[in-house]
Length: 355
Image (cartoon, rainbow, N blue to C red; front, side, top):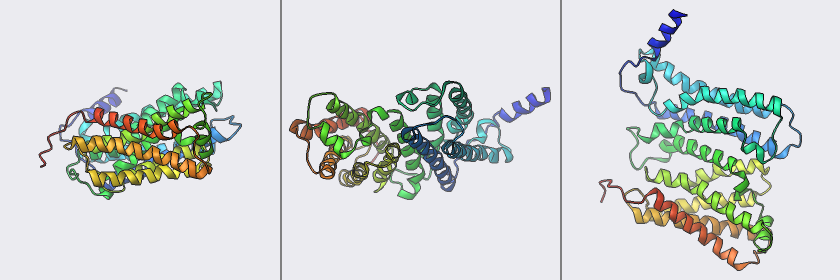
């Protein structure tokens, strides 16, 4: 035991070298393995939302989910072990951006064990209680740290300037996009992407009851979940064309899985909104050094997204909402919320040295 403890101490003792970055290809593999991990969770979410009887922890969709965890975790651990084999020790062996993901690996495993015990003794949740299970909250927090590893790796990578190419930024985009889907999953009770076209038109055709209240609140919540990651990235980079389209396309996968893609027109409307946002970025060129453009993009992107939402719902349902104030005012409210987000993310223009 004494020899073992001494060996562990030597391994953890920092050898003092500056930490290094992994290659873009390594980050891409990390992101793709994270996709496996994320798709596994989406399959599991589909099962919980659409199958009537779930009586065991040991299911095919849990197998996909946890095998994805094993794959991406093994890959992250290997990046540190490769540096250990080169003589590095402690933090010096962990690549830049990979420390939080590495620390989250045993945490996720512990919460996975807790989740198995929870399901074994307390049963399988199939309603809103699934979103408040302590073991699930632990899983989602540690999973987010793991799948955003490529984003942290790219954040200060020496080969990534202010205008990265789409291909170079792809691992970071994928990691953050799947992280946003985790948030959308755990606020499913306020997810406007899960509404059907007929449901949107029906509840916005009356102010009686709580349907219109629920949809209006869901639009605000979903607006923040979609737009905040984009604004976060715009503070750091001038996003290449297609970035927001990719992020919104990934973003619709989780609510699509939960609804078995029965509301496909609504989901495709968000992908179209991502394309409109990419066009707005090309036109306005928002960045940390251009505060007015940043604010303008935040407001206009939200306005366009939710205008498209109601337009697509109206076309798919074959009629428009009967309450004109809701039809016209809801996108404006979303645009104002977007503007507020823009102000919060960038209250003052940063001095980037550009003219």
